[in-house]
Amino acid sequence: MGNPAAGWTPERRKRQSEAIKRWKPWNQSTGPKSPEGKAVVSGNAWTGGEWLKLRQAIKALNQAMREQRGWLG
Image (tube, rainbow, N blue to C red; front, side, top):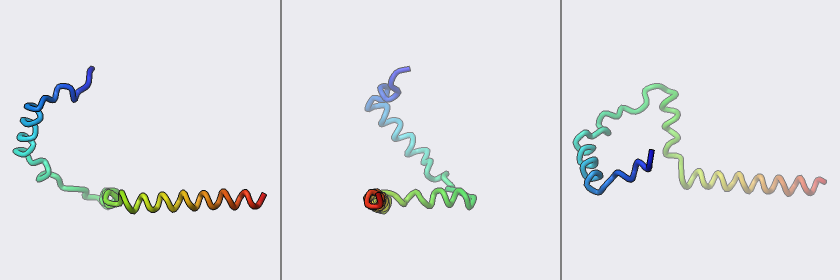
């Protein structure tokens, strides 16, 4: 099977956009019900800046630990 996006002409995209606006699937979305599901989606917004800062801090800590291991022989 070829590239599925290859069949999306500008006209088809417009028709699909109009259909989605009619269907309004976001109005039927209820979100998670269980505590487990709520815990999973609570992390969705924890991206970008905070995650990047944590990742950089972990890398710096790992580098410092490697250096100290070298000093200990």
